[in-house]
Each structure stands twice: as C-alpha cells, then as structure tokens.
Length: 144
Image 1 (cartoon, rainbow, N blue to C red):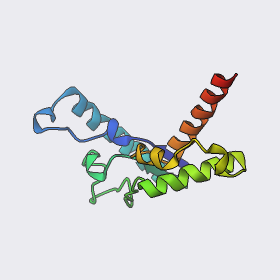
Image 2 (cartoon, rainbow, N blue to C red; image 1 turned 180 degrees about the vertical axis):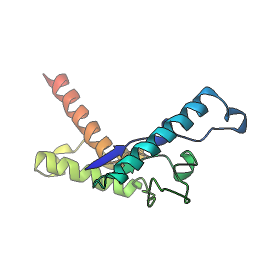
Image 3 (spheres, rainbow, N blue to C red; image 1 turned 135 degrees about the vertical axis):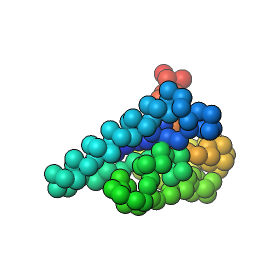
C-alpha cells in the first residue's frame, strides 16, 4: 500500500517568519505533524508494508520534526524533481497530442507548440493533458 500526502507543506510547513512561530497556523502545523508521526509509528510497529510519499515545494518548507534525521524518520530519503524545461514541455505536448489522436501534428497547423511550451513554465505532463482536453472541448463547442 502507498499513502500519498500531496502538498504536505501546506498543512505541516514551517512558519514564514519568526514572529509567526506561535501563530494559530504554526500551532496547528505542529499538532498535525505530531499526529502524522504517531500514525506512521503505528503503521511501522504493525510491520505493515506501507510506503508513505509526500510532495512539497522543498524539503526546507516542511515542519522541522518531519525532516529530522534523529529518532524515527518519517521519510528515508528526499528526491528533488525538476519541472520540465521548455524543450521538455514541447516534447510532452507533442507526445500527448500524438497519443490522443494517433495522427500527425500537421493536422494542427495553427497550433504553435513552441509558443505554448514557452508560456507554460511550471506545467507538468498532467497539466498539459488537462489543457489539451479543455482546448479540444472548447474547439468542439465553438464549431458545434
């Protein structure tokens, strides 16, 4: 089994500034972190084969007790995944369109994939799939 905690730093992040360390949000983050650690400890003690994976903006944006290297580790390793470059975004767009329609890109002569790739910094493959689906839907509505 896998437990995926997406955007974990949104609920268990570090305070943005020292003056926010005792804010209600910081206290809530500390409490939620404690609860998560206890839940994962229970899973470990039951010898369950459960992997827990979390996403966040960065390792440093997570609550300090989550990334602690002392005592029980919540995460055994951290992996930084870069967002696609402009060239990679172009290749992703091209691949999605080819796979969706199973024909050449020449049929999309008015579609400038280079421009789309340039204007979509920070997008990942899933974002492009949604973007293309919406564009297709919009095109069908405008023609229909």
